[in-house]
Length: 190
Ligand SMILES: [Zn+2]
Image (cartoon, rainbow, N blue to C red):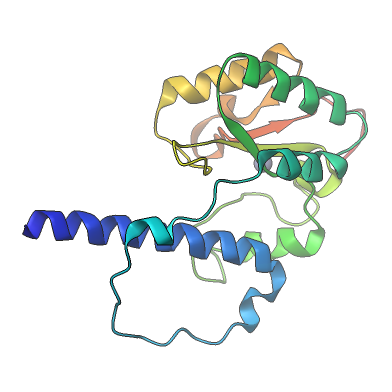
């Protein structure tokens, strides 16, 4: 009984974190303006009602592709087609990033709370020029997740390389960035 409740609490907690992250992403720069959360007595909700709807990959992907560099667009399309042909459910999570967005995520884990999520200051990321995109496979609920499964990432990475992309999963040490793909050696683009 105790184990069941703990498992359920852990599930609810991880669902809530996912929802929170999705919301923060949606709010973007406005997130700082949010009021501090009040600590409330937790209310147990049946997990089904807490599950966000599966991500709409079609509109998500086309929205991100629309803001990519014209040279990267066809590669991203080919990559998505090849991934789906291999039966891997996947969504684009990031593409073009403004300098302001880059500044905000660069500060994360440095002058702002959180984990370090990028090593590129504003202007130093291919994302700032629409020359890169990030991906995540989808879990059984149709939501993006970042599995530890090395084989899955390698399959995804090799598909990207097969269409001519550079894959961040090849980068050494802390720079390794398995969800990241970019245009290969664009002539003086950055
Ligand atoms: Zn990236």
